[in-house]
Amino acid sequence: MYLRFKICRWLDKDEFKDLVRLASYIGRRDGCSWFEISFSNSHVDKLLDLLDSLKTFGAEFDQRSKQIVDKLLAEANTVEIDASTSGFLVRSRRLLLDYLSTFRAKGLVRYSRNYRGFIVKPYAIVDVIDRLQREGFKVKDNTGLLYSKKTLNIVFNGKLRSYQEEAINAWRENRYRGVIALPTGSGKTIVALAAMVTLSVPTLIVVYTREQLNEWAEKIVKFTNLDKNNIGLFYSEQKSIKLITIATYQSAFRNIDILFDKFSLLIVDEAHHLPAEKFRAIAESILAPYRLGLSATPYREDGRHEELFRLVGGVVYERSLSELLEEGFIASFEIVPVLVQLERKEFEEYKKLKKKFIVMARGRKVDELVKAASAGDDSAKQALQLLSRIRRVLALSKSKVEKARRIVENELAKGSKIIIFTQYVDQAETIGKELGIPVVTGKTEKHKRRIIFELYKRGRFRAIVLTTVGDEGIDIPDANVGIVLSGTSSRRQFIQRLGRLLRPQPGKVAKLYYIAVKGTQEETALKKLLNSI
Image (cartoon, rainbow, N blue to C red):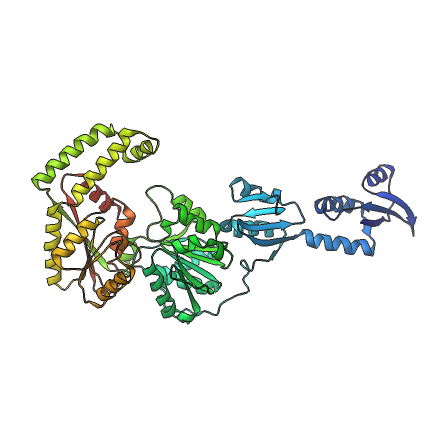
C-alpha cells in the first residue's frame, strides 16, 4: 500500500533532503511537488510519526490517500475489549505499552503474545479504560460488560436512611467500585440492593451461606419490583443463572468457568472472607468491571484487608457502631463483662499447661510461633498445641456454663430472646441439653438449621445456641440478648455477634454478656475488645 501527497510551497535544499528520506519524489504537477511513500497498515504508530513530520511541511494527501489515512487513524484510536478466561483482553492497532506501563508495573496488566494484546485484571479494567479514553482512544466493548446492553428494568421500593444514601454516592463516585463498611444490623443488604438498581446491569451476588442466599432472594423480592422468577439461585442443589443471580462462595468458586463472563456487577457479601485463596479466585476470575463489597469489619487481624481493597476497590464508605448509635439508627446496647473463676481441678490443669507453654514459646508472640511452626520449628508447634489446650480449658469452664444458665433463666423471665455463642460443639450441646434449647453447629443439617431459625424468628424458641456458623449473616431481627461463652479475640467476630442483636426497633436495648475467666488471657482479650468498640 502506498500513500501519495503534495507540497505546493517552495522547498529549500535541506527541506527536500529531509523529505526524500521519508518518501520518494515522483515529480511536479500543477505547481506542486508530489511524493509517494510505501506503508504497511500494521505500522500505525509509524503513520502517526509520519503525519507529525509532514504537518511541518504543509503536506496534503490526494483523495484516495486521505481516505486511507482517515480510516487508519480511526482504527488506530480505537481500543477493542474482549473477554478471556484470564481477564479482559485489550487490543489496538497502536502500541499501548506506554499508556499501560503504570498498570503493568503493579501487576494489573500483562502482555499476551498468544492474544497479541494486553490481559487486564477484571478489577482494574475501569481504570485502564479511563486512562486510554483520556489519551483520546475510543473504546469498543465486545464483551457487553462495560457498557451493558442488557440493562434491567428494576425499581427500588425501599426507603434509604441518610448514611445509606451517602454510601451509595461514595460508591458511585468511585466508578461503581469499592467496599461499604457498616456495622451488622445497619442495613448493608438494603444499600446493596439500591446500588444494584442504580446500575441495573446483570449482577452476581456472592454470599457465604445457603441461609444468606435465601434471605437475599427474599429481600430482592421485598425491596424491588422483581419476583422470584427473575432471580437465579446458584448453589449445590440448584444452578439457575439469570440476570440477577445469587451464588454461595463455594458454588461460585467451583463454577467460575460457567459464571466468569456473564455479569457486569459483582456484589460480595461478608467481603472479609474474600482474601482466602478460594474466594480470592472469584474476584480474580469473574470479569465484572463494577464491584461492591459489604462488610461490618473489612480490616482483618492478619493484615490481608489490603488485598481485599485491591480486589474490590478500596473502602469507599465507613461508619462505626458508635456513630450510628449516637444518631439513633441502631438499637442502643450494653456490653456486660462477666468474670468467673476456674474450679480447682480446672485451675491446676491451666497452671500446668501454661507453665509448659512458657517454656516452649520462649517469649515468642503467637504470630511468631505460627510463622516458626510453618517453617518446621517443633518447639513452636508444641507451643501452639499447648495454647489451644489452654484456650479450651478456659472456654469449657463449668463455671461459665453455670453462669450462662443463670443469665438465660433471668433474661427469659424478662421476655428476652437470647443467642448463646460458643466455638465448641461439645459445649454447645452441653448447654443446649441443660437448658432444653436448640443447638446449631456446622454439622447441623441444612433443612434442620432453616427450621430452627424460622421457629426462633416466630418466637417458638426464645433461646438458641450457635457455634461459628451463627456468626455469618443470619438475620434475626428481634434477638435482644447475647451470651458469649467462648470465641476468638477477633474484633470482627465480636462486632458480628453484637450486630446480631442490633436491629433497629423502637425502644430496644440490646445486651451482650461476655463471660471470661478472671486473671487469664480471656480477661485481657475482653478488655482489649471493649476498648476497640
